[in-house]
Amino acid sequence: MKEEEKIRDFINKFQSVVYNFIIRREKLINKLKRIKPIPRIFKLFSPAYGVCKKCGLPWNHCHEKHIAVDKLSHVFVTCDYCWEHSTLAELNKICVVFYDKQRHTSRVNGYKMLYTQSEFLKLVEKEYYSKYSETEYKRIIRKQKLENITKEKAVK
Image (cartoon, helix red, strand yellow):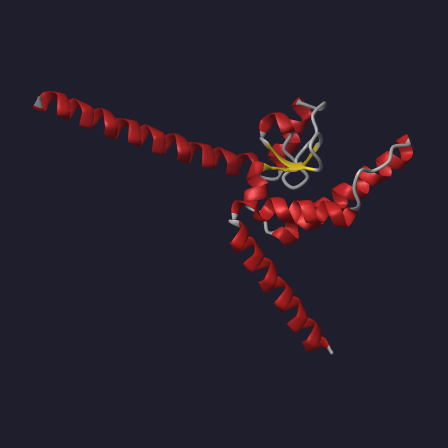
């Protein structure tokens, strides 16, 4: 029995070490892939793919972050890594540029946009805060509104 327990214990420790190594390796690879010239090189080898609007990696080298516009359509502006490592203000800037390009393309091609820019930014904000519970989300929004009001009063 003691031999079996030692073997199980060794196997569990070994699996833990391997798992931690793999996690650290993936984090390092994600950071290295986003060093400025690297995304451009990846893009040269896969010109048919779109890219993350923040880091520039083609979609075949990273996982896109989907934002549900309605039940059937999704938009992806950034990759999961950039989404997780960005503030809401940074994401809003990126999404405004993306929306403007998409609106221009839809005008040229004769399509109608399904949503306005403010609706899109609300969807982005909702998705950004979706990692929080609903009560935390409401608390954050209230806090932001109070901060905006105090800033407006300070300006006057």
